[in-house]
Image 1 (cartoon, rainbow, N blue to C red):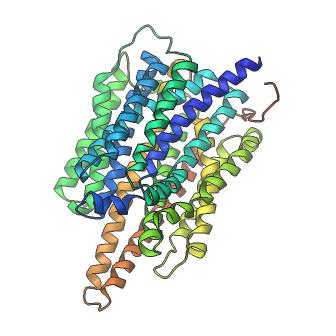
Image 2 (image 1 turned 135 degrees about the vertical axis):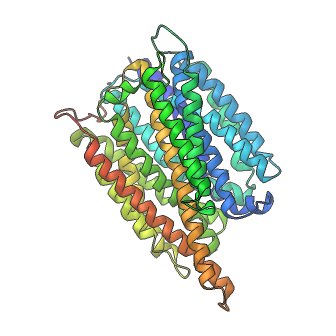
Image 3 (image 1 turned 90 degrees about the vertical axis):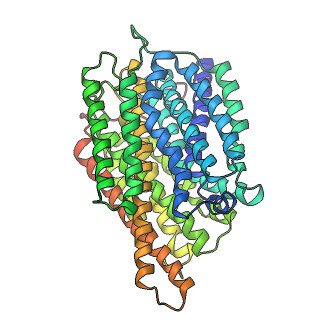
Length: 485
């Protein structure tokens, strides 16, 4: 009995490290962006978002395909192959010589992550039995997902200052190699019990292309104009492709995303809540990182350390939530946690040119982190409870898709809002003598606008949780740890 538990926990450790690495890479470059701007000769500061967006866009676009491939062809096989690709692309990102190279390599890196992440979560779902055993494992998983982004900012600061920004990518290589070796030795192979191994390629092309065009449109809309012909055409094309994807799924014999999965209680609500929460999270890391470096003058390592309260708070909250969710279920933490995130962003939106870390940044970070600790764990449990074993990869891919598309859309929208707000401020103060102060104030005005909209995203998530997530009476999840269980 003891050997079985140790083996399961070892499997959880292996795939959690891989997931930590995937989440880490969506935020680790934030602190390095100013250094990369000069080194790789980007055209403008706003174009820096593509270092983040290229990764998250490809990640989100290919996740459903990655999750289904894991179910059909073997979760361990897909996991190991994807981890190998992730290591290779991390190395290539580290040796990139210009902005185009880093954006292309980051996109391919995101695609490999799209196969690795759902395979990893699917391994967790098939390794741990539904109930308190799985809930405990998913609590660990949720903490990794919520804390990885914050740790990424801290680690990115240390690596950028002492070793250079390229080590933000090189560090993945030995970690990935360790994960690959451990997975080959200790992770058991499994696949869905289906009578076919056919991927829905038309569906894959439609959803991937549609999502990528949608995010691209949100990114370019501020410069094109929200009501311009180019913007409307792109939105129309994205909508047409995604509508065609839904139609294809309703008719396909071997659908990439069988629509029947949404009959499982709370799957739809959990995924819809995840979208705006991740959008709000990405906005916080991106804009607060730029604020503490460009306005407060923090060094990269000091910027990273300034986010240290986030993973600490998430870690504490995750321990608490294991007991709380067992008593009250997962709906209430999603609703209340989203309100915490909104309030944290509201406080952060009061940053100023003459502000300070202790008064303008720290309180908002702690409150927001507490909300993340509540919501990420609860949403992970809500989105995977009751899902049949043969669709575990699909559920994993769907949840990860919501995370990454939410982050990509959020960052695209908020970067546009920030840039347009700053440009308007500069235009209205063109004759001001203190041009340097005007530019700094314009940047902060842009950050404030973006953070306020991020707050709105979090409020939407709370409303979605309240209206769409339902629990049957008496179905609360027992996450308490029983000795010898």
